[in-house]
Image (cartoon, rainbow, N blue to C red; front, side):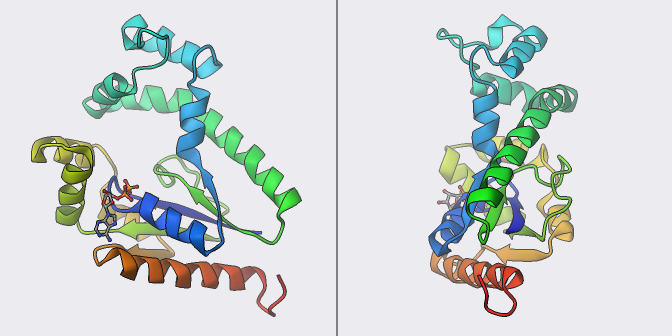
Length: 206
Ligand code: ADP
């Protein structure tokens, strides 16, 4: 099994590339999905979040108001760190469980660990590669404004609350430049998949 991490900046095209890699044959392990699951109502992380941020963070149905929580942490790095300390260890544990399951059942696979905060969370160790989906910041701003219907200022605030994409790029072993067309990125993603597949079976055994 080959496990490569996939990350990028907000709206750099990580989800787009993840879908292309999946089409190519990779198994995607989505850390964001785990991050949503571990904070579901009445789970331990949910309780810790309510204790820390207060009842006002809840929606009428008792679920966490992710937009409100997002606004709080975007504007306050200390709060962001507190939330990360609650959520990250649980995401790491869910990820490990899922990887062990794949290792057992689909041993020859190329696994893509799709983690927005791969580098920041320290989940980038022990991987065969670190794939960073890259676009220059002006493209990132444009795409984020369109996708999430944000003003330029809102988009910039979200981008600036993250590790700069240029810095993430320094950690990459594979950079997928997504500033061209989708088709161009699809073709790069396919090449990357094949390269990873060959790592597992250098003599053509899979
Ligand atoms: P991320 O998962 O990194 O936040 P997305 O994959 O959602 O980013 O891409 C951000 C936005 O840019 C989406 O609206 C997506 O449809 C669009 N997008 C992604 N890649 C391209 C591309 N190569 N050309 C044009 N638009 C793109």
